[in-house]
Length: 628
Image: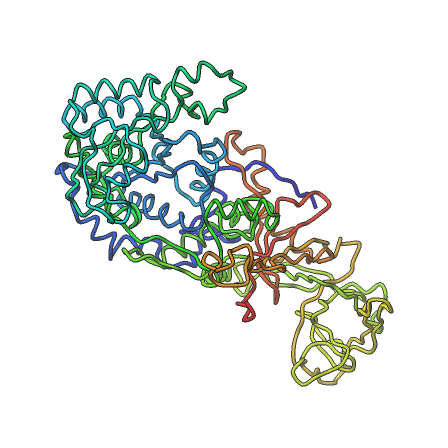
């Protein structure tokens, strides 16, 4: 078997979305109605409203506006599904727009990863844009705002501004900045001085002249522009080697053209307007910002999109913040951002969670203004239900013990048919049955008990799909470890005319048959909760104090039946290696090879697999572990 990481074709062809789960069949749907969130409730009500100032709008336009300073996580999948799905459902357009207004925190790898995750989830933006595409126009609008007496240059410190805003907690009455009533021409001159590098960071700000009497903090003279690069005179005194890119305000796309950068509060609504967004759909933490969003558009006399807010998707039992994940990585608790124990989207992809399962999960939650906090185990249950009907089945033995069936000839070879699923449309495959088979260590006990119905000395058990049962007759143990190393058994084929006695239970197995390359040997990684409590974010001793030391279990000697060859052949990943695959297509990873290990768990291939080494990740167990 040859396993290697290869480029793939387009997502639409090879990694099914929530409309069509990844199976050996092309069309079967196992999810709820993928459009139900748009037909009723919050999003249906939003659609029935008309964007202000746009009576002639006849095409829906939305946007997904991530800041490219980190990797997307499961919570972002809801915002992606809402914005892209809302536009698609109404035959409209959705932009992917990077909010790249803070060069100190943005990196190319984040731009790439965000775009890749959106494609992986099955969406294609009508266009990819950046806030930086509009820096020239935004600057012009800032000057226009000053001329309209809607903004002024302020030289106050952070602490002074906090005092003006009521001491941060309303401890003192709010009051106006002393620069608020400076002449328009003076603010224009000072703003241009900011632009030209005459001021350093925190020495000057452009603030919007809003409404200090409002009860909404978003109207208390928010910052519109700030200086990020040092003063020109200071920069000239330093050599390039003395100053890092983020110190001199070098932007990933615009270089060192700009010394000043617009804030989110200034940029977001105006770029929405410039791009003709009809519905600015965002999460409820931006609800208070709707007032300033509308104020700025109206003050400049530009088209005002309609902002509406929905509840975030939050996950308990894990951490999602960039700072905390970085701490997990730096302390060696996880390997990287794509470690399958995390809930970043790249980690879930590597763990083998299908994109369709994520979107089916989000759709099932619905959309409202209420924040939705979901336990990790509920998400896993949703993935489990999705995979139940979406993937094929194989036999996997995690911790094998050899069983010698003494009354079968050494050269015995019988081909046993195993269905890939309960659904006959999945087809079947054949595996060898020989004198020597492997069973899982958990399926054997040295002594019998009333509550154990698998293999013990003197008792019988069925081997899945093998005609007759086996009875353990004896076993051998390692004198040092005390572990059972070999089981001897008898094949209970009845004499001619005798009645076959059906065993109480059946176990999975894999035969030793070198001529058919059975078994396929593998390393299996089982993933358990990363933390030992449900709310690591709020633990009094800190989230690092409740790490689960058994969050990853390695089974280095696992075995898989030879049906894996067929699963791989029909999965999206190997097909992308064909000569017909377009050269500029996306990359696909081996996790698209997914299957159920009967009686064990759902698995996928990990990218660490190679030509002579199979590595599996456990996606989810077959049922929830009560001990979790």
